[in-house]
Length: 111
Image (tube, rainbow, N blue to C red; front, side):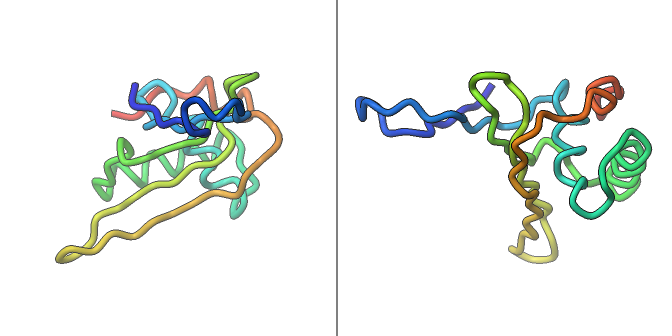
């Protein structure tokens, strides 16, 4: 797993979150967080997003997330989608104080 420190090493401050590159088994949870502001989230919306991403060949391994260090839930997500030339479109979620919906955790991982 690729991670980044939320606080500078040796700063004496423990951040309540850490940054990770989303691994295959967490893609449904991260996708749910990414789309919940526009769709309200839920199992069906997440499934539709994952299907559309596969259809359009969007590489969901380009998702990064902030993870709550206490509970392990996804707080925020960023997805980078390469475009034409040397461009990249960034999609971001809102920070949520709530853990991801359990239904999203039950979805199969993306391919």
